Length: 149
Image (cartoon, rainbow, N blue to C red; front, side):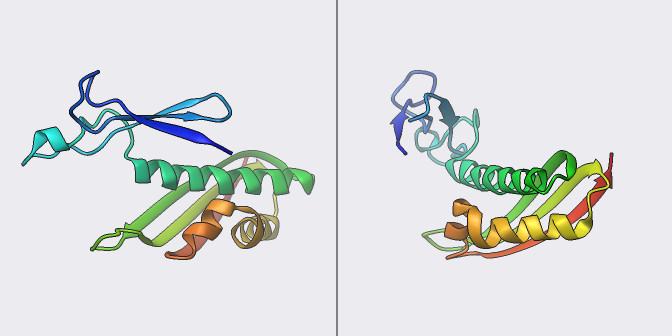
């Protein structure tokens, strides 16, 4: 796996904190920093997600992918899956994630709660590389709801 991240600055200038990532699979992802009221040249323009937001989003995508795949392999009629991640970070540098809660909403026809709980546990404990890595610094908790389609 590879990725190249390049500083773009702000709107083509070499000030600001905009970045573009080009992934090995041929896709691009834009990131930006938060505006800095004290030193605007050191901040972003709030035009894209922050780099750590993309890390959190990637973790959500990784675990949701697992949950859907596990449920489908179990021949469950899953029709939707979303996960809301709520994270807290350390107060001092490095400001790592210290707590993450993942709340899953799974929609389907007759999907048993036990199957969803098992899929989430399998993702969390075995398959989701991103959440396993983040689990080294953060307490990760999960919750879920099953909605009938």
